[in-house]
Image (cartoon, rainbow, N blue to C red; front, top):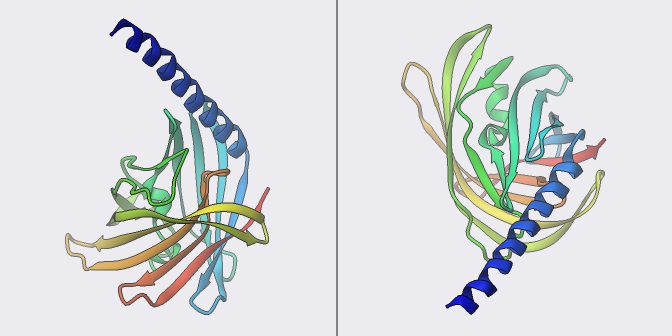
Amino acid sequence: MKKIMLTIIPLLIAVQLASAQNCSQFINALNGKKLTYSNQDAKGKEQGKLIYTTTKKDAATITVHSEVSGKDGKTIGGGDSEIMCDGGIIKIDMKAFIPAASMKQYGNMQMSGEAKYLTYPVNLTVGQTLEDGSVTINMGSGGAQISAMQMDIVNRKVEAAEPVSTSAGSFDCLKITYDATIKVKTMGIGIPFHMKVIEWYAPKIGRFVKSETHNKSDKLMGSTVLESIN
């Protein structure tokens, strides 16, 4: 037993050190970056921009300010969230997963809500099943709450390893699929909207490079593509 314990302890230490190193590399790679995405309709025509500005908060946390603009370049919504890396697990605040189209119809909105995180292991593998996530976002303007949006993400799976090239560069990505349900409640009443989402996640930047949203009949509704990293 003593020999077994002496073998296990160095192994645990090695795993912890590797996880810490991966997190440090991830945090430093994302710190101070501005990621600009193009929101496109089903025909590939740009409908607006989604911009994430990242800042290192501490050794394990990146703060993210998001800003959504329409075709005319005017801001139609925004909010703040966090990305954390702990023990080899990247945790992304689920407020960042609210589709731009869902915000657009409500005009100039601000989002707030308790932080709920969707997890991505640093070392993802094809065939891996990922944890589900759920979050409720309060939407308001001028300090007054107007409605609440609930989003549930389930059936997350790493389907394949695929390279993706955009105007921002070439990335080694993992194709992740999941089902999402969004319900916007006004006066306590809301109708659920079901979607199927495919995202090409780049571990190097801890973010998706491309994302497609399909309806429950698998018809493409729109996509979001990384345009630049500055």
